[in-house]
Structure formats: structure tokens, C-alpha cells
Image (cartoon, rainbow, N blue to C red; front, side):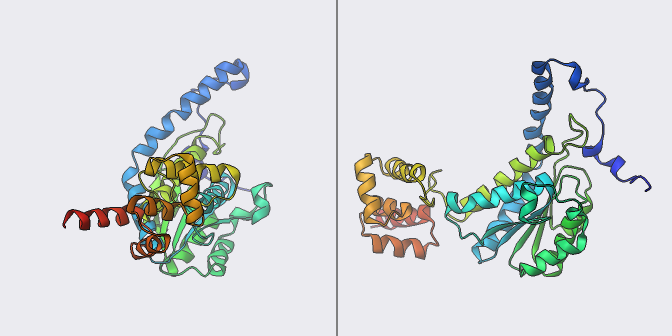
Length: 309
């Protein structure tokens, strides 16, 4: 097999000869080298906040219209997409269909390497077809190299179907660029271990994904005064958190927060609206529906009306 000359030009596949051989260092010295490299990642992401902001706005606009968001990736990038999608329902009480992840190789690839799965462009296209992607949806391709065939196929099919396409990669001038409406390319450079993109490239991807979903959910009214008011209390920790959120939003004690939540069927937003506005739960739900679930708009609108009297 002839060597792939394009790989030699990928920053994530380069060998950083300035790094001393890790095996010759003490454990502390080795970790200092890794940590020094890691510290560069947030600053690199900072340089691409404009593109990330454009992506957040595009995602939130389509989700507000009933669209869906699909992360598509392989290896570390794909697993990070699965993680981010899985955390949206408990954090923001979203329907699991709103933010989904498609992993090259399927669920088995989460815990085991599925060799060759990422090399099929046709498989990426097929997964987008099977998902029934439409023009109001968003396809986010995740590829450290920016040239993964599975991701290229998914973006290509998403674009054919009129979906908004976004790519997240760790190399300059990624191949996915020409299939992406919005390109987020954070060039993290050579890894401390050549080609191990689970390191700096993975960290950059995680930081970007944090911003994409968190930013979109804020725009969709899933937070109020930086409180997680749309969480789904599915375990003891989250039940306790829901009470503390109501306490902070209303400046009440634990018992009063518990009473309001019980009155409102454990709905945090409803309980806060009831406490702030002095209305019953059904009226609070009606106001929230009218304002598409945005508690801040409910409160601001009521205050504006009151101030005008």
C-alpha cells in the first residue's frame, strides 16, 4: 500500500520533535509536559468563538422550529458527541430525539474499536437517510482530522437534504469545509504522543460541544438566571438540586421550595413562576406555554405590565 501523502500534512498527525521522550522523564515531568500542551487548548478555542456563536444561533433557531440536531463522528470525536447528546435530557429536560448522536460502527463502537467503520462514506450517508434528516435539522460532523469518510458522507447527505451542516475539526483547511455551512476548525497541533487525538484535539472538541448545546439551550429558554430550571429530577441528587434551585430563585427555605415543587408536580419552572408571580400552577403553565417555556420572558413581561399600571 502506498503511503497517504495527505496525512503527512495534517497537524494532528505530525511528530513534535521538541517534546523530550516521555519514557525518559519522571512521572511528574511527563505530566507537566502534557499539562503545558493542554493549557493551549482553551486559548485556541477562544480564537474561534465567532464561528461557534454562529453555530449556536443556527442550532437554536432550528431546534425552536421543531428541528433536531445530529452529532456524527467516529472514534474519540464520535464518543464525545454521544456523551454530549446523552446529557441533554437530564440537564435540560429535552426529548431524547432533539439532540442525537450517530457513531460510526454503532453502539458497539462506544466501548470497542470497530475497525474500518469510519472509512465508509456510504455508511455515513445511509445513517442520515435512516434518521430521516430534513431541512429544519442540523448535522454536526465531528472529525479531528477533518477528513473522516463517514463524517464526509453524513455531511454530504445532510446538505443534499437541505439541513444546516456544521463541522468541528482540529486541523486547518479540513476536507469537510466544503460540505459545511459553518466551519469550526481549531488547529490544536501535534499531540504529545503522535496522532493520539484523544488528547488536545479531544479536549478542544469537548469544549466546543459544551458551547454548542449549552448555548443553544440557553437561547431556547432552558435556563433562568444561570439556574438549571428545566432539569428532569430522575435521582436523589437531582431532586435535591431542584429544591436548591427553587430556593435560590425565590430566596425561600428548603421546606417552602419542597412545598412549591409538590404543588407544581415537581416542575421547577412552574414552581418558580408560581412563587415569583403569586399565581396558581395552571396559570403559570399557561404563561410558560405562551412564552415557549422561557421563564425569563414570563417574568419580564409581567413586570413590564405591572410597571405600566
